[in-house]
Length: 240
Image (cartoon, rainbow, N blue to C red; front, side):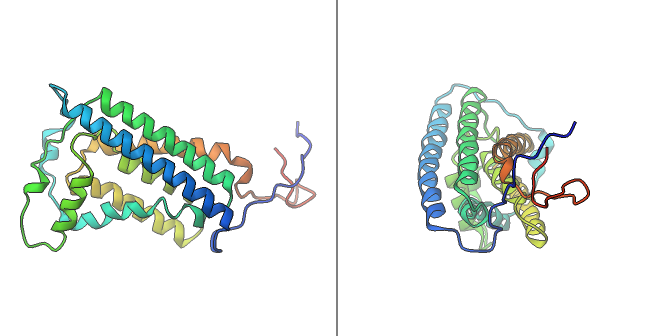
């Protein structure tokens, strides 16, 4: 039986216009908190695991034949831009709050995994790689900030998938395609720069997907909806 409509739900302003000052302030506040949380948990977990007497090797021997592609450091480091896009895509404080809460929980979950499932990579140290590629300094920088042991899940992939998935629900057309290509390139870059193995990427993507679902469910009334004039006598009315 069809329930009565509770009234119109107005979708937030579409991406394209500059965010309001309130949204920017909200984003900067969350960004500061999440950056601090990330730094403490990511560095703390790496420090703890570095003192473990043992660490697991969760990779196939065939993965060690994956080539090192210094140029993929471009996509690896480009991931730093995905979070600052939030206020330009998510136009309400409620949407920003939902994304930020999901990311906060995601970082905590990844940190627990790092400590409970200590791992180390099987590749030769990237820091020892030499050559004439102009991307080598960027590759070495990426390897430096990635630290040593935080592998399963790939928080790099998880955070990117979370933001990209939430943005995807807001974007249309070419923007969606570009975001999809960027997401795929970023995931591949974690392997081709020898920062992660396949299981790291898969578990990171799974964690990111969970965070996307959580964020979107909490803001479901704010998502764009499609009306059906044959069943909805008043266009813009939300009928469950």
